[in-house]
Image 1 (cartoon, chains in turn green, yellow):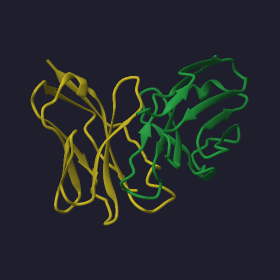
Image 2 (cartoon, rainbow over the protein chains, first blue to last red; image 1 turned 60 degrees about the horizontal axis):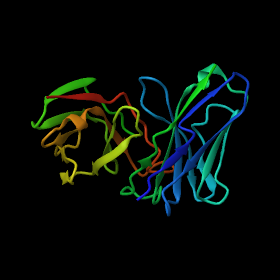
Image 3 (cartoon, chains in turn green, brown; image 1 turned 135 degrees about the vertical axis):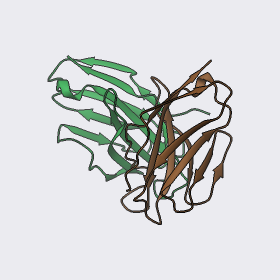
Image 4 (spheres, rainbow over the protein chains, first blue to last red; image 1 turned 45 degrees about the vertical axis):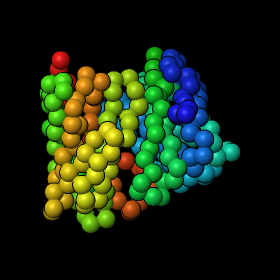
Length: 116
Length: 113
């Protein structure tokens, strides 16, 4: 079946611009996560949605970052006033439920964001 | 969540078993051990997880020591496609979600022909 889909796969933007990154989770998965991965590092947690609500946004680095999931399916990560330090691969993952141990994450292949 | 320690890199010959160790000496009783791997230019992929019993699935086996302070992921017949970064993660019921994972640096496994 279809996995987690992320678009675009690559995004190049200029410093100061606004970007939106989209994630289509696996159908029926109620939990959705955003992670960020810098070169040579493991992924870092950004935000977790259970349904439509952000249950944990403790990983968002600052108020330039915001994410929504209005209908409990597709999610958009929004970054305002981009900075060169925002350059990374942004990964989305979904799972059947975030509150049980045997509900593994299914990751997309990420959006590579480059801020010039 | 308990911290994990993994060797930075390992090599394995194709067709042989790959045994990837993980130390988690501060693990507590309700924390699970999860393994994910990440092949170049792809997102992480779930492999297996366990609490205290050994586990096996179609991808791998997970052996957890009796004191739970360490574990080993076993790929029984490694192939070139198993070349990846392997992450060992300890996660419990505390916090908001089992999916809020802390990835370390992982082990880069290289499978040679």
